[in-house]
Image 1 (cartoon, helix red, strand yellow):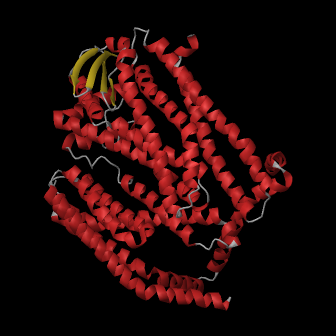
Image 2 (cartoon, chains in turn blue, cyan; image 1 turned 135 degrees about the vertical axis):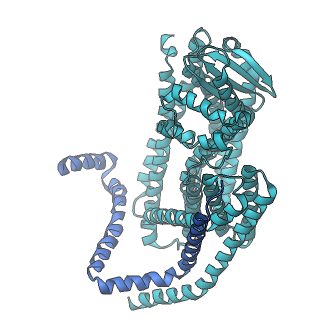
Image 3 (cartoon, one colour; image 1 turned 90 degrees about the vertical axis):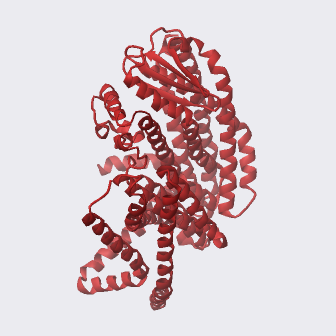
Length: 90
Length: 509
């Protein structure tokens, strides 16, 4: 049941690193924007990736348009439209 | 009568019940999305009422119909197959006995629910309390009703079964009748066991190829007796009812309270499986206390008969979901914490945390914002996933911090895997208490006291020594509170700076 001292001391080091990580989390609100700015300066292409990501999240909300279409066209029409659209897309 | 002899028909009816019940939840989510759009005048009210008036009732009627047919088929199946047939095959005996309890009980629950509960719940839901309190009152009312009707039904079945199943019990040999638990040995086609602990009495069935109680049969008997004496069936049934009552009240809640119920769904779906694994480990612990290391060989023999493998880690997934893969550790060392996988307790706590953090975000959102209203589901989903992942990370980091302390105090009582699980269990409890204090406002300290008491009871239960468990909980909690204090102090500096930057960006725009 008892572990060799080497393993225990390694475990204590890991505990210290974990504790330091947890405490450093309090600096995330200022560290993350700083890191973001640094990345943007070093790699300008990352700004494009950010815009694409933002757009995909923003337009991801278009899934709700399904319900909206249903109001205008009705339940059966929209479902048929989905089926036909899937076939056409395939 | 020939169709009643097939257990598959009964099972198909129950599967259809489950499918229709899950459809209920899917439709409820849909109705929510539509009602949100309706609220912000994106759609008219007629489409909303179309769903409510046409789709929902049809599906709500089909669910009880499948349920009633499943129950009737089950009773007829028992009558034609089990009670009259001389041959006892192990699988049909389990399913028939257990499903009789389950189906009659659930039928009474469904009955009481639809004819008594709806009025009560709608009344409670319309009381307009604060959202979290309203959820709690509705949830507890629904759960109390379900639990009461289940327990009453189980007591009635306890009184009926010894008379109705006399012919079935006569096929086996009564080997013990102590403390309300009756143990029988049957001649089966292979080694198997089934333990059922009800309120008034319990049953332990052991199946052996010869019909005699050999050494392996005795091992199975101890395991099943532990299930019956510990009333594990009642515990698991009540935890399942928690999930069921949370799913049912979705229909009666509106607005913020509705979201709380949806957000808690994953937590309540995972909870019964974890409790089931805890019960199995405790039954194995009883086996270890009886036979010591010999019990490992008994387990290997049963596994060889059942699944064709002799290592519990290589058992099929269906077995490993309910029985932990590392169950040989509890049989060999008597450490009931070690068999649990290291993801079990953190996952449960993380699901709980994600639900409450997401809900507290919802409470702080401006309700009049059109943009938030339109993308509310998306925002909540992303935030749920984010808080789930971050609380998992925090729990594992805190577990690493606690591990040396837990080893210092508990190294003599738990093995390596047990120490890991104990530290993860402690960090899960503390973090869940911290998150629960988000909803408790000025009563936040009750969460700290509750965390201390719960952690102490659980660790004392697994370790068996009050002194060392007390020191473990005290020292880890002191570290946890100190880390929280340091975080708070640093945040006093960093948070205003971040807010200042954010406001600056806002003004530039």
